[in-house]
Amino acid sequence: MDDIDIGALDALDEGRLDIRHPKTRLPLGWVWTFYGPAHAATIALADRVSRDAMRRAVARRQAVLNGRQIEDEERSYDDIQRENVDNIIARTKGFSSVKLNGELLEFSPDKARELLLDRRKGWLIKQVLDYLGAEENFIQPSATS
Image (cartoon, rainbow, N blue to C red):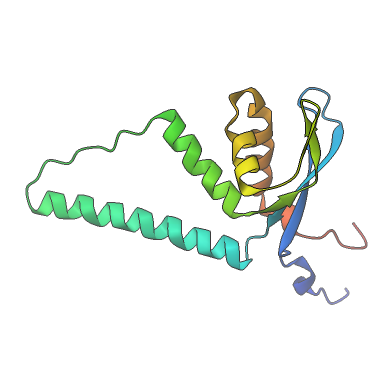
């Protein structure tokens, strides 16, 4: 048996998602580039999300210990979606230019946010979330696979 070098299986710092037509699944030629799991931007995002969760947990625990009534934070669908999109933007390096209603669209965080929050383009955020949720998307295939 050959010695296997598992270093070749490390997640890359960047990954490319070829956006597909939502119905035919054919590539559109529109590519989004995301920071990988070990990239500094992704680590900073994970740290921020963890700190926010810890802060909320500590506040709840203190409220219980002090005998205060705990009020559940009511968040709308739009609030949750905006938070998800902000997290996606933190991991987005860019996307290739594309036309939107005949106008050329170049990457900017604001343009990406606008596209991802557009309810008519739910297929886009689904593809992005599916891609980011699978770490193997950031692992380069071996020469033998």
